[in-house]
Picture (cartoon, rainbow, N blue to C red):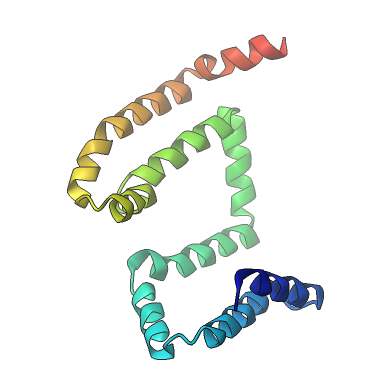
Length: 157
């Protein structure tokens, strides 16, 4: 089954009103059957892929987020952060960069290891100066808000 045919099937199933999850599943299943993959190998790879801590922790994070949203905690936390800091987007962006680079959930580090084939310890040691710089910028932006708000104030007038 070629890629254009898979995309066509995907779009047709979506227009028929099937949920996205079912559409992806049906399209993938038909592609697997059409390409003569070994089904036992596919199930084995899927099982091995699920045997990782981030994949096991993901449903718990989703559950925690739903509980927090349902209880109204998320709105109160967000309002507090906006009142306390006012420039929450900049701080959240820097925190996101730090989170992507720091172990154990440093997704960027695992991607670099997979693509480059370098040992994980060497990658972590190479990224430490960048993390230190990001932490320093985070502290400056958090405690000296004028640094991050000067340029927008000059541009906006």
